[in-house]
Amino acid sequence: MIDFELTEDHKAIRQTVRDFAQKEVAPRIKELDEKQHFDRSILDKMGELNLLGVCIPEEYGGAGFDYIALGLVCEELEAVDTFMRVVMSVHTGLNSLTLYSWGTAEQKRKYLVPQAKGEKIATYGLTEPGAGSDVVGSRSTARREGDEWVLSGEKMWISLADVADNFLFFCWTDEEKRKKRDHTGMSCFIIERAMPGFTSGTIHGKMGIRAGNTGYFSLQDVRVPQENMVGEEGEGFKIAMFALEQGRYTVAAGATGLIRASRDASVAYANTRETFGTKIANHQLVKQKIAEMEADYQMSHLLWLRAGALKNAGQMNGKETSLAKWQATVRSERAASMAIEVHGANGYSNDYPVERYLRNCKAAVIYEGTRDIHTLMQADWALGLKKEKHARRTLPPYTPAESREAVAAD
Picture: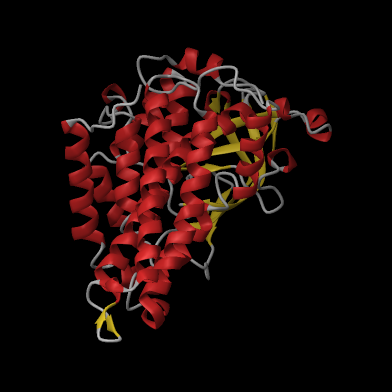
């Protein structure tokens, strides 16, 4: 059963994030976007508000909220600009929640606590120049030398690549299984920027999310101790898929915020712009576009709320999370496009925010599983060709051991 009424705590955190984003970032976002400048101080302020660890238990430095709170944070941040939601996706969704569920006590003490507090920034390294949706097509490797692993490889299109302190790195630890494309030969490691052999860079000239940092990082014979392996050897693929599900949830909630922003901008413009002697709000086809944006927002909002409620309950949610991500991102693309049409020629100018919304929304239909991947996944579930065997559990009262055992088989 889903309770659609937010708790007072949920309402309070939503208002806190809305105030922060509107007051601290909205007045500056046009300039940051034009200059393609990533302002690290914004992350520091997010950390001060406990947003970076919003759903991490208090014992690990977090705020101790639930998945609904995480979704609300993401929706409010992306309603101003996508780059802030991306921070939540990679730092909290992909990295910190994965460490909470799969990390050892020592890993959580050393890495999760400062990440939840916002003292350290983290990201996730899976995509490579030649491997995106085809995860087992990756080429990164690790070889064992005594109590250490020697890691090499390059990751591409990584959010926060050039600013993060900690990284999750996925690679092959079994060469024979790599040749057979057997994903049980993949493992996951924690990498620190300061480790010798680590380099990173920023990708310039992006279509959207220009106020965010996107780049690449590479490892050249980087030595890490055995205790930096997350999970067991050979569990890397399962950990990667587990992490992606948390990331997809944040993307779904964020895209919903972009739909809302497109709707709100269109409503404001329609109520002031006049043509043919009347406000364009009185024209039927303008009304139709705004009505469709409203419907897209409400549907997308309900889809991520449903996924979040299932996550909170520790129930199976892979299908629901996938559906929320797929539909919210596709509908955000549609809403942003319609918003430009409502604005007419002005929508083609960065004097209005809707052109930025359209540039930003395009990435979300690609990362965390393309629209095509999610379309196939939903079809396979409907046809009975794909089934979830277990719930994916991450938040209390479930333990890391239960989380590990609960990850569904591929």
